Image 1 (cartoon, rainbow, N blue to C red):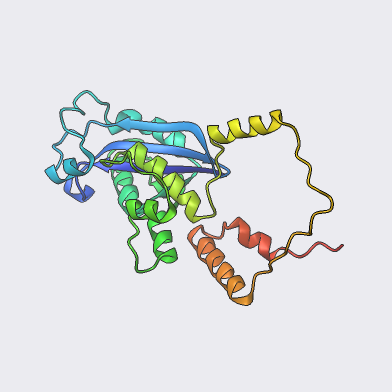
Image 2: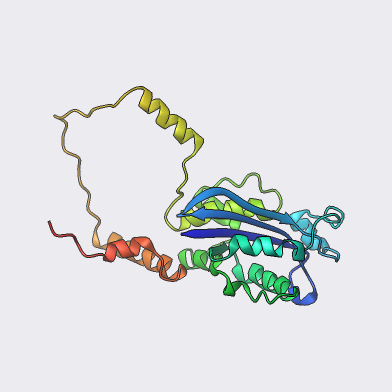
Length: 243
């Protein structure tokens, strides 16, 4: 399963008013594991950037003066995301801008929906945490994700943070850190630790009805947000294997 976590920065809020994309950041997930595969590009928008937008992302017209235009990178971007499931926070905003940029090009690129499916993590967060703040900073606090480097918005950094948030919201992070690798190596070096055969049997705690109902409700929410792709729900519904 290939997923692309995507974020953009723009000159303003409305593509209908001529605003443009000025940064695109993408992070690849394969079977819920982040890879080293990235797409990151700053873009020359051929227009001024709203002062309010600069306050959000810190990107200036002067910085973008020598950067390529969207038309110069469109083929590479579409090759990178084609056939993947896009994961975007407030997807209508980013997809709207991407569709606007594609419509400006020759060659009949169509729309993002012609190339990819999309998961909106803002909609998912609102289902899971109704009535609470669900912006990226709030979700980082809720799931204990470090976003201390996020002084300003940036497409690639926000995509990397959103990847962690999405994995936490939908079942937990699935990465192997360098510390984990080092720890595993140390464990191998000290040999196998055998358990005492005379130890007391482990206590088995079975979920009660309320916990089972809460579990089922959580899976139903994930299944709806992912378009029926909740793997855990399928496992729960699988028939028992006869002994």
